Image 1 (cartoon, rainbow, N blue to C red):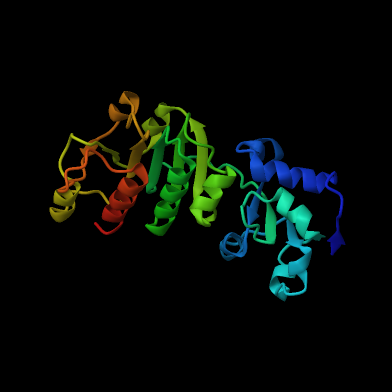
Image 2: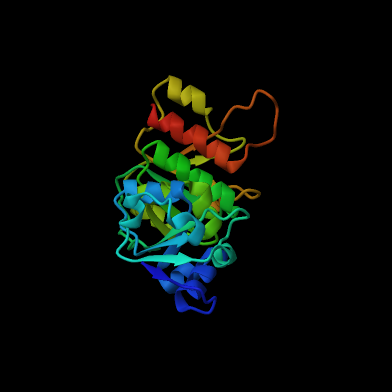
Amino acid sequence: MNRITSRDNPLVRQLRTLARDNTAYRQHGRVWIEGDHLCRAALDRGVRPEHAVFAESHWDSVPEDWKTAAPRQTVLPDRLFAEISGLESPARMGFLVVLPSVKAVEPAVSSVVLDRVQDAGNVGSILRSAAAFGFRQVLAIKGTAALWSPKVIRAGMGAHFALSLQEGLEPAVLDGLSVPVVVTSSHQGPALHELARDGRLPRVCAWVLGHEGQGVSEALMDRAGLRVRIDQPGGEESLNVAAAAAICLHASATA
């Protein structure tokens, strides 16, 4: 176990950057996950952290499996841990994790395509729904919020480690998929519940979810084999994209 007290230590500087900069993970090839829930989710998915970091006040009460989870352990004074933390109430422990290698797009698996979804909370929530309902890969079109940014990681609640994630893609990535491409639309296409009721909703497919204000782009609409709307008896104009995603992905998973 190593103790660090200087805010200018290279590890401390790196963690501070990863905790606060949305795209720093691309340069460093690592992500910082903070709190026992996220760290446990990573371990449960077979992730081996590179480094475990603890606040000093927490060290004596840390379970033994946390202390041996990573090959390196570091303890920081509470004030220094709070300084690097991206949370209002620091969680007192976290893991430095090597960014998973990018896999090739799998053309035949259940997928979620994010078309310029920009709110980090929405993106994280969609990843969580994708993992919960058995979708295996998420393909983010260029303009979507950074998938491994601190806010998306926190909103995903561990879902990142159950998914194959790719970002910065062009719409043409859909041309390589062999599963049906389904887009959500506020006003076009058959109702989701009718498709599910009649057995016409594909279980293995790629759901395209669009920008919060503009919806799905024409380039992706043109590549879709099916457009689906969600009935809203209450009369609202549209649903939040994360809420719509949960409804659609659940419907496919149970089709």
